Image (tube, rainbow, N blue to C red):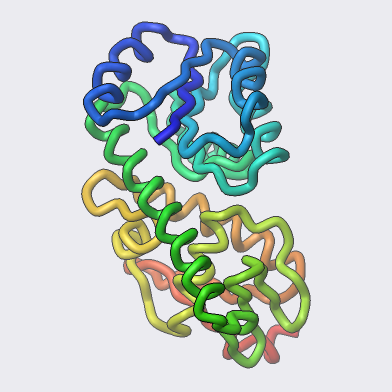
Length: 244
């Protein structure tokens, strides 16, 4: 696995390097935002995982995330930061991050998060390749009265209108909920199904993604991601006609 760690604290990088070496990963290190983009741009499609510190000199983590996403929509990004507020999480996800780890963190936890994101990314690629090899038509993989999700093009539509700008994790979240309309998923279930986190997940990751996903859905029509208080979330478009 080719990993790019963007972290201005060299002691953190040195600590993690021991764990990365144990896993046998190829790791490059950048210590400010400008150096990060120089390294990334040498081979934008060659990275399997990026860990990105939010507070960087020369160019901050939010700017770096935006620039990376312009070149690659699929490379998983884990944002590392000392900040721990919901607004910072949402902002990080808006900039294209797939996950959020708060400092100080356990090296074992970060390695587990990296493995989970990489595993999920590989599974998504394998599923798409298998569909193409078998000649399956996945244009309408998920279809309800008001909703259509295209697995092959990774697009989702509400009453024929494209839901704009879905990030990889937002798409997977919508796909997971949409596959089983009206079934309630707990946050723990969504962490395991979408992020592949069984023990290391933060439930606020789910809430932040749902919040951003809802905003994008509301740009084209009524809300179809419902909160089931005290439990979790469900997909339900049965009331769309009544909300128009």
